[in-house]
Length: 131
Ligand SMILES: [Zn+2]
Image (cartoon, rainbow, N blue to C red; front, side, top):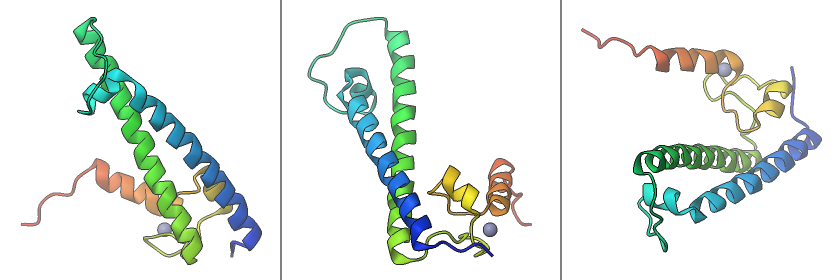
C-alpha cells in the first residue's frame, strides 16, 4: 500500500505553495480590473464607458474565473493544513490512501478517484426525495 514519505510531502507542499502564489497573483490582478470589481460589487475608481452587453459578458467570465481561482486557493490552503496535521492523503469518504499519481495531478484532492466519481454522479443526478 502506498504511503507518503516526508519526501513525498515536501514535493506536494512545494507544488501547492507555488500554485497558491500563482492563484493569489491571478486573483489580485483580476481585482485590479475595473469591470471585475463592478461585477463583484466592489468600488471602482474609474468607470469606463463601453458596450454594456459585452462588458456584462466579460465581467461575468472574469467573476467566474476569480471564483474558481478562489475556491482552488481555499482547497489548497486546506490541503496544506491537512499536510501539517498528518491527515493528508487519505480519502475523506473511504479512508483509503490516495494514489501518488492522483496527488501529483491534484495535490488538494480530498477523495480517491472511485469516491470522487461516485460523488460527482450523486451531484449530477440528485436523489429523489424519500417517500
Ligand atoms: Zn475513497
